[in-house]
Image 1 (cartoon, rainbow, N blue to C red):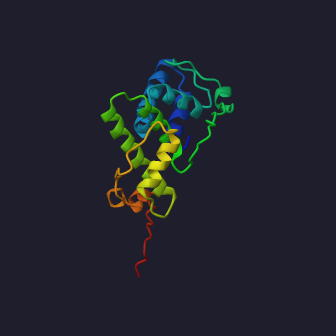
Image 2 (image 1 turned 90 degrees about the vertical axis):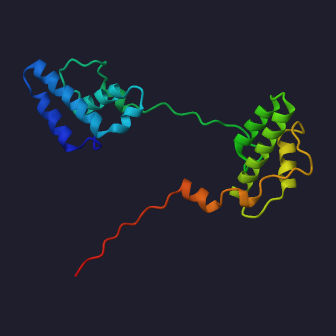
Image 3 (image 1 turned 120 degrees about the horizontal axis):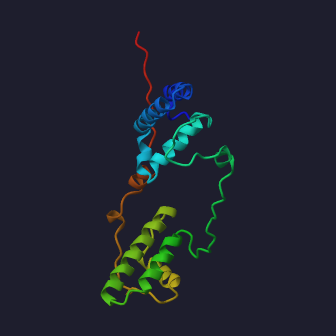
Length: 194
């Protein structure tokens, strides 16, 4: 496993050939600690210790004879294909608003307090305006968004005709959104000194 490097591989190879089982277990415990320090991103997982032990067995080609706190996985477990992740298939009425807008509208319909429902609906309309501007280069009027909101909710959510949505200048500029989504790679070029 390349994320641990050749040093860990050499340590595991050495530990495999230690004749005394107690000494081998102690060496493996040190190797597990080193692996945890080398790959700290695993600590974000609930079962990171279990993953470290699985990685150890992979590095050792399942040749370790040690006292493992977890069940030793089989090689078939790692060689088999993972189950196919089902892709949610649902019809989106207005693709440029996305499925999230439809889900937000369904949540808004459940709100009983009229004042909260109005504010929530206005926020949905602002979200729809941002989504529209993300996918369409031209400006959009508030009336278009209000009509789309009425259509998406099947006339169950409406805002008054004079409702003013967020202005384009109040919305984050596209360059900021683009930079957050796709940060530019830094080109580190070094000039030769003569």
